[in-house]
Length: 284
Image (cartoon, rainbow, N blue to C red; front, side, top):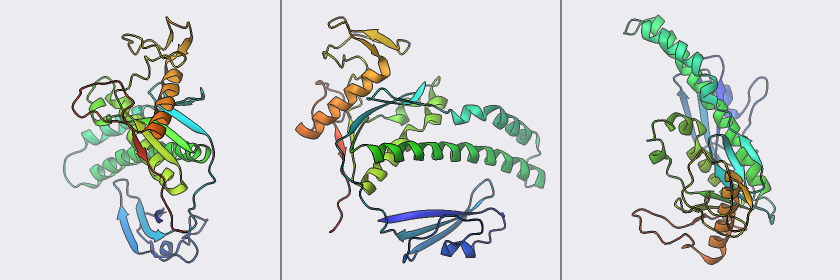
């Protein structure tokens, strides 16, 4: 297993040689025992922080014990994740929390004379630090969510969303970007490979929100403003997101057993069937 470990030098002077061996005053991540880095990359980001990235073989990453649990996940904006169990993960909206602070820093940068002056460089670095703080908080939150999901579930079913097309919606682009659905899926898939779990992505056109998870009746048009609805056939009242997560799980498990082709027939160019992210097979 190739694992990248990243270290930071808080001094800002770029003195990174002690970090190459995983030693750092005050603690910090260390290299796996007996590991030797094959690649060492030193870089500085726009916020002025130094990073050392070490590529090495980590034999401590082993598949987790198998379980019988499976979960379907519906991503959203009001709640970042809704699970088929009914649990909802709140959306921290990291960019919104720092929006006023970021706007102030950007106005201060705009007032500086263009050029290579020290005042403009400092203002630019202040903006970069706010962006970095937003990114770090978002990444940390997603790591905690994905690690928990992978540890607790053997099979995880998600939707194969095309985020790059969804952000073309001007009214939702900022919120969708802040939610970082693509980053969430990426983390989920590589952690599933590490720990012997299975990630299934169902077709993006499957009507998970409009399909009754109790009797299978398909409802007509349903605008985003409708958050709860009652099935006309069986009378079951559904939470829109929880119902979608249950349908996502059911379709994903069907695809796992029967193969692809579980969505309603639709002749749409580029439409995809359910896909599996197979767990990593290790040599005995």
